[in-house]
Every structure is written in C-alpha cells, then in structure tokens.
Image (cartoon, rainbow, N blue to C red; front, side, top):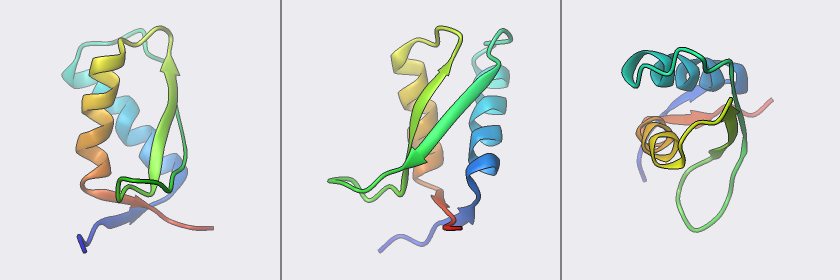
Length: 75
C-alpha cells in the first residue's frame, strides 16, 4: 500500500489549480473541483471539472501526478 500525504478537498483543488495554471500556462483557468473516489484505482479522489475548457489529456495527466502523492482527508 502506498503512503500518500493527506490533504483536504480545498487543498487538493488549489494544488491542481496552481499546477494547471503554472505548468501548462492555463492562465484563464479559474476553478478545479474534485470529489471522493473509490474504484478500480487506488486513488481516493478524482477531478470532476476544471474550467473553463481545459483539454482532457492535460487535466488527467496533472490529476494523476497528484493522485499518486496525495489522498483526500475525510471530514
């Protein structure tokens, strides 16, 4: 089992937002929303949306990097 750092929903949303804005130059990005996840993968959260109009491959790649390092803190 992989040990990941726990982060709140708002912390994870902010981390993803900053990564997409900074690393990909998506300066018009104004929000990222996540939700709890439980399924085939071992992730504890998933990105529901990011906007406006973020290309799906970039969104998935950025989210995957954070999903590998951070878990959603309950509560």
